[in-house]
Image 1 (tube, rainbow, N blue to C red):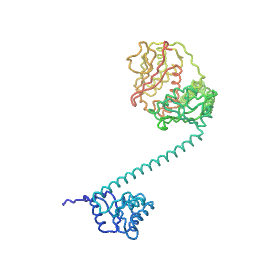
Image 2 (tube, helix red, strand yellow):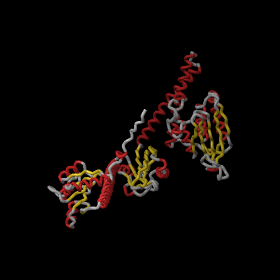
Image 3 (cartoon, rainbow, N blue to C red):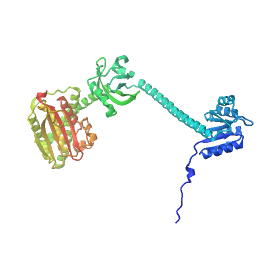
Image 4 (spheres, rainbow, N blue to C red):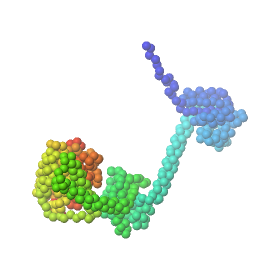
Length: 519
């Protein structure tokens, strides 16, 4: 089969350098200019009358016009004046070509709006050079105009955005502040912020939250602001806010990184949740106390039934009783956990600290959980270490048994759970190079061979009512409060708790506590 050439002709791919309109009543001049310009790659339109040239320029504006002066009906000066009076053709460069070489003729041409004047007879090279120069100037002018238009558009849009932001900023019911990232100094706050804080604008601008004593954790907030370029936006950070009069409020802070005139700043939006927190705490406390009394009575009645003093139950009755007992115990744990957590958060629970031995605590916690481990066929291995802690032994036992309970519950039959302790010389698990010679901390680890924890859940599992899987509360019997309680207990002991996990393989919880000598 013959090969078909479907490629485009070479000349069709060459676009004209520019569109030039030539207006001259002398056909010889038209032919000469048209041939010369076409050979140089220009698109040429030729007309012999000024009126025809005006219509053509208005219909399809050319890039440049070559215009003769002496023409019948309408001379070149009049044509140029009409071109400059029309918005569509005003900016087109016009070069006059004429046999008139008097200075006054040239002045008249420039007055009419021409950009150049070439006298006849002309040199082709001169005409080409001047055309190329004016086309270059025209192209640069259009580029500059386009840039100016874009700049004006950007300025207009930015002004509108700033005006809109200013209106929202001033009228927002939410307290809003703007602070520099470098020093966390306030550079502007809205009326709602002033109303919440009790300060006037002059007292706030230029100061930091620490200098104004706006709360206990102002240093941490300042550090969070300074890290915004690395961390990005942060939302709903709970913060205890202190007003000018000393009144304490609970607020949620959201931080957004913004740029103000090239200066990195933080946009702080606050939400006062003081009343909501008070009502929430009262509701939880009320419900918890109201539930505890009937649950205790229910549990007593179930114990009486299971003892057989009220008669022997059938096998089906025993199953129903077992279900009722399990769920009542779960409710009691939930109520107790809620009460514990609320008392810790409100400062109404006090730790009774004393010198205690870390090894004894680990052994006691392991013995307490041994029955659960045996039932689920999970091995418990303990590696204690003798060390003195200044702590509330009951609260630490509560923490350790909770962590062991979780490790056992999420293990499979035949798996192993390890609880061990080592002496550490720093507040993190790192290399011991260049560390002090004497240990200052006790590091307790609880490791399992369970399903692991997804990376996005590693932090939130320490929050209230948070679990890795929503079905855990049904299948494993958890309340979602245990780890939140553990965290509060460890924080009350000036310690730290965290977790590392490999999804599908294991999880390791770390508890770091100061030794007696480091208190």
